[in-house]
Image (tube, rainbow, N blue to C red; front, side, top):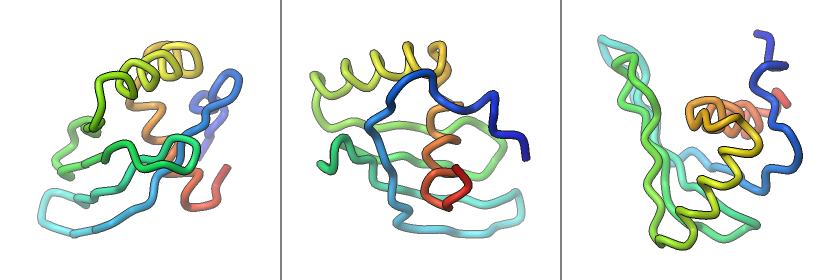
Length: 93
């Protein structure tokens, strides 16, 4: 899989850690904790039905910082950002 289009522009100080995976008839659902500079700030959820990932951030300030980094590093494409984090967790980038 070509990740060149999914690689952030500049730094992206986020990581995720998968907390659950479930295969079902429509695909694979998963959940993960979201970390900013090593501090858990929220979670990411994929229902496995072909839709986008959902990002939940615990603090409004952190939500603003997340949006700023996604806008700058991934041209406002949150799906590319969460895909990058998944690939980063799996060691693909």
